[in-house]
Structures are given as structure tokens and as C-alpha cells.
Amino acid sequence: MDKPFTDKLEASDVPKMEAEYQDLLKRVLAIQADCEIGGPHLYVRTILPTAPSKVDQLIVARTAAEEADHYRKVARLAGEVGLDLSHILSRPNQERYVNAFRGTITSWEEFAVFGFLIDRVGRYQLEEFIGCSFAPLDRILPDVIVEERAHIEYGQNKTAEFAARGGASKEKIQRVVNAWYAKALDMFGNSNSRRSERYRHWGLKRRTNTQARQEYIREVNPLIEAMGLSVPDPNVGREFV
Amino acid sequence: MTQAPNTQALDEHMKEMVLALHAAVNRAMPHLKDDPKLVDQALRDCEEILDVVLEGNVSEWLAR
Figure 1 (tube, chains in turn green, yellow):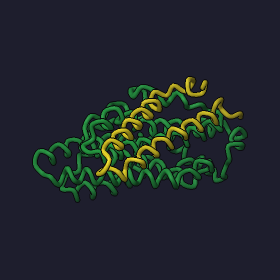
Figure 2: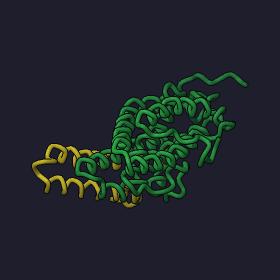
Figure 3: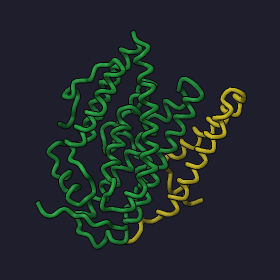
């Protein structure tokens, strides 16, 4: 393998880079922006009006505001390297890059588990860019990651509450965890992805898909068990392995 | 490489909408127990703003 790229670039440096770097940078920015705005598309219209209390409704609104702001920050960076991502705002859910964003969230349990499991993958994806070769992306991360952590914590607490109620509530949240766990693991991508290696070569990501997925599993499985829930079979319902 | 068209304008417009959302949430949070009308209005404002964001009619936003 050729020598890894370790320089730090500004937007003005990007046109001087090889086409592969430019393509991968634009791709990763497009996917990140798509995921940021993809979340609100899943739940705002269904969950904001129906959340169980006014405070929960306000938290849904604040979460969506923060995700829209993350989209804005990433789309701004993409714009600075010549990529217009405005069309992503209104893209139909079925056309989203990542499978987890292609449906609709219709229950409060799903919203909770989405925060617990999927926003956590989002945090992992953002952490891939810490110290990355595109310095403007590295600079937006601290604030974005703090907000993602709050979404995860809220979702985790709500998921734990459903589990703690026992009975039908616990059974339902287990089913929801099972469904979203598979989607969460798939979000890390194919274990044999060549593109993943090229991202690492160009200093755009730190870990392989497999490494990140394994770290996620090591983090999230004990949390699921601590709620008294069963860790889903990691091979069921998967699109990628 | 030149900046994509409308990068700055879209960024500024989005920022305004995000600030308006945060303002609505922050206006309502302290009054959850004592002013249900204010809270309901803030929630309606949030729904309205988020509808506009998710519709993503960027050409219309930037034409204003």
C-alpha cells in the first residue's frame, strides 16, 4: 500500500489534489449531509405532533433543529469545494444514501431507539473525521459531536424507561431494538470495502468499517444488556457483513 | 475550484431558520407548567419552520 496522506488541507487546497481525493471528499460530505437531514425527515412530521408530552415535543423540535444545523455546516463545506448539496434537503427518504434513513419513524419507541442506536452510529461516523486531512471538517466536529451525544443520551434514557416498565412495553422495545440494531451495524458498510481503505489512505477516515463496527458493538451491547434486554443476533436482518 | 452557487446564501438562510427554531424551543421550555398557550404556539412555530426546512424549496428561499 502506498504511503498514507498526512497533510492538512483547506478548501483552497482541494483543487490541487488528485481526482480520487476530491471524489472521496465530496462523497463523504454528501453522505454526511444526507444522514444529518435524513433523521428529521424520518420523524418530524410523525413524531413531533404526537410525542407523549409537551417537553418531549420540544426536545424533538430541538433535536431536529440541531440536525438541520449539522446539515448546514456540512453542506457549507461541500459548497466551498464546489459541491452543491441543496437538493439533499428535499430528497425523498427512499433515495437516501443509507438504508436506515429510507423509511419513516411512526412510534415513540422507534424515536427513542433511533437516538440510542442510530445517532450513536452517527457519532462514530463523525469521530472518523477527527484529525482528518480536510481541516475545515475537523473544525466543525466538537460542537456537532456534543449535540449528537445529547441525542444519544436522550434516546438511551427513553429506551431504558420502556424496558424498565416490563411486560408488553419491554417486549415492544425489544422488537424495536432488534430491527434498528441490524440497521445500525449495516451503517458501517461492507467489511471488504476498498473505498474504506482509500478513505484511510487519504486521511479522511481513521478506522476500517470492521474496526468501527466492532468498537460500536463493544460499546452498545453492554448498554442493551444493562436495560435487561437481549442483544440481538448480529447476523439477522443484515444487508452488509 | 469555485464555490458552488448560493453556498453563502443558503448557509445564511438555514442559519436563520435554525436560530428561529431554537428561539421557539427556548421561549417555551421555561413555561411548560404555567403558560400552555405559549408552549402550544411555540410548537406550532417549530412545526411550521421545520416544514419549510424539510420541503427544501431552496430556489424559492433564495429568490426572496
